[in-house]
Amino acid sequence: MKTTLEEMLAFRTVSDTGSITQAAQLLDQTTSGISRAISRLEEKLDTTLLNRTTRRLVLTEEGHEFLQHAREILDSVDEIEELMTRRQSEPAGRLRVNASSPFMTHVVVPMIPAFRLRYPEIELELNTDEILINLLAQDTDVAIRIGNLRDSTLHARALPHTQRSIIASPDYLARYGTPQTASDLAQHATIGFRQPEHLNVWPLRHA
Image (cartoon, rainbow, N blue to C red; front, side, top):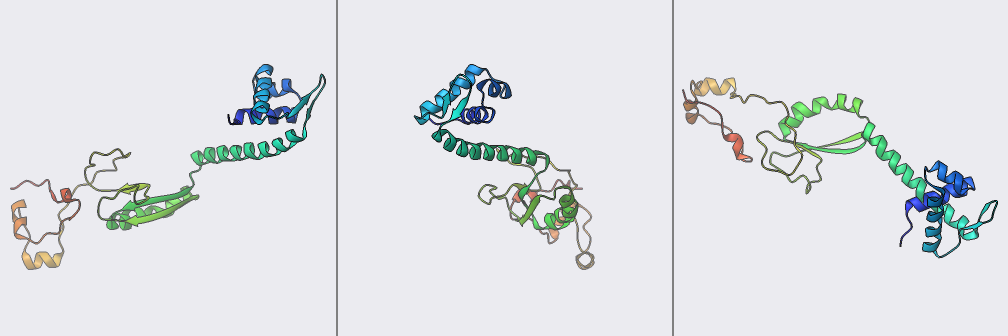
């Protein structure tokens, strides 16, 4: 059987207070519960950690050595818990974001200064891809994509919707004319998406 953190905590508190009764009060437990925890600990370690008399508790040599290591372990746990709690109120660490090149350039990048002011402890890593990616394989935290979400076990949140638009350069329109109806587009050169192909389906009505 392995030593538990609860047993270490009971032992440390008894050692610090010099009293099972006071340790029980500090840990909001019963004196019998603390006493059993110490007994289990000694049984697991197969050694005596405390010499008990009617007036006081005295650490054995093994008790002093175990206490030193127990303090280090419990202090490390306290530090980890404090770090996790602090991260809930003050996010920190690396955040990997993936989006298409145009969206990253024109939408995400302009927001970085305000984001860094609000979350100074977050280190941003920006990557661009024009296709759907495997977030786990590419070690990505957040991916931003346009279009309907396929069936997925990933957590997703819809961003504001935008209207799709048909655009052309003035030079192109001057050379080839301006389409008047949706069916006219069949006679024009168009640029589409190789992946994902569903972005090439336009909700246009023929007039």
